[in-house]
Image (cartoon, rainbow, N blue to C red; front, side):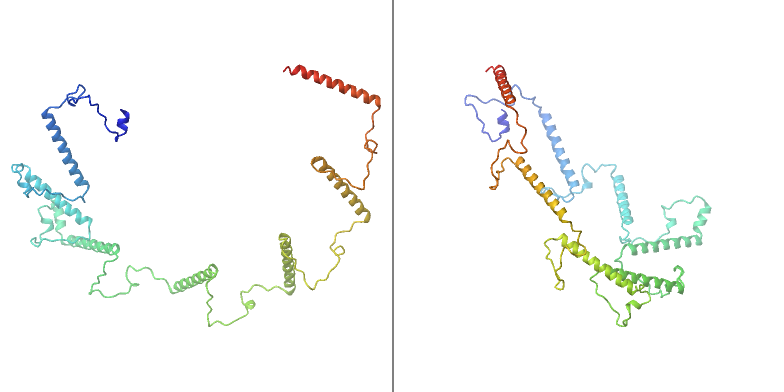
Length: 386
């Protein structure tokens, strides 16, 4: 059964001796719903399908509208179920108010939207309109009716309009500049709102500071950009570099000679260091230099005497012999090299041979070694029972 569920491509094998039975009348079948319940369930599913389609239409505004060609146009407000609707007028008034509020909000949110005026509407007094607020007392009415107060309010509104236009000019850089032909030019620097004008001395000092800053910038660019070409003023003539006013103090002849000697020594030390650092560097010999005795040079170390040289040679020979003897002991595979000029002699009679034991001691030692060997063999027989 598990294989039948996991392998959907497996063919169904039917036993030919098994006869069909009703699936819905089997013993384990679910309870069958009535006809009314089936119709109600179908109606609920149809409503859910319509609600899903309506939600999809709202969530996807780019979805195309599908119209049934069998449906003809009709007035939504003359529907049979709305002919006797008592809230139709109230709903229409609410929708009209919402439309007006939406249009008003659009006018506020889009200041660039043009104002549309109904040609059938004539001017009227703002303060005497039916929706105007009521004045609290006669004093307030008198204030509002005062011509001077109205003029002040008009000026405030005019200032607000000018500020709005100025803000629009700054926010919309592509807006063309509109100049009133009745406005004549005036001095920008003599206007009442102009900044305080600096004096002639301050202007000259500021110009000097800016000129110095420009020169410093030019000098910094010359140092930072080594590829920058040198620009020479053709009106400038040559002069002594070392005789200029801000020239560095010139050193004396003695100081110059000492400095040259120091630089020459530094150059030689540098060359000597390179010769030691790079042993593959070829030796460059001057053709003007003749041979001399290395050991007789002025900077040669003190020469040792003949006795010291002989002693040093003996010490080195002993060290070489000790080294060779140590190599013979450490390297057992090293072949033995025999000097053909050396003749055989008795190992035991040599001058450096150990003292030879007497015959009595030799026999006694041989006997002791034989006893030890017999004891060892006996111990081995007891320990190895196999």
